[in-house]
Length: 186
Image 1 (cartoon, one colour):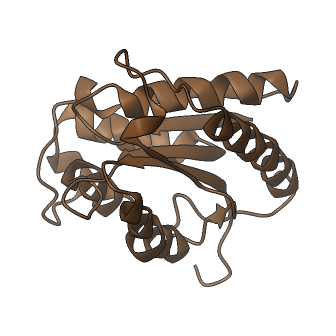
Image 2: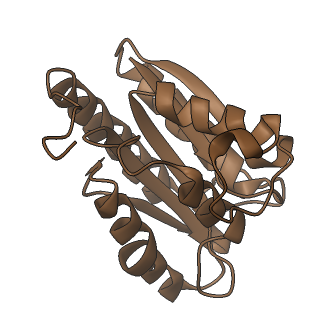
């Protein structure tokens, strides 16, 4: 099973470090999961405006192919101004609604206030529900105080929640293997 780890921002290091930690915990489960990673900072992004996919640059086409070829996703996002980054929403806007259908997804987010966890509930989960993803129920939200000066996670409770997220994601991934991805409404 190939799982796409999505670093949904083009700046900063906290989000990537959280993904690194989740990857380590998934590997510790012993599950046969191949990880592929998208760091949005490595792509030349174009504003999605409804053009057909072939009208976008190679990076945007590659991004779509990476989403299409994945069997599941771990999506990491910072919260900026009470919202997900525009670059992450732009990527979602480029995807066909069936690309992520019935595939497992776990969410990790980080922000500067404790209230920003609501962005996951009010913005990100509805987008993933639209795609009909199998969203694990235990997303992890981290706060600036959970990191040291090198942006490494230092809070043991956060580590425990990330271990649990990894364990649950693996179970969702196993469950989704036999679930047909073809939509009945196609």
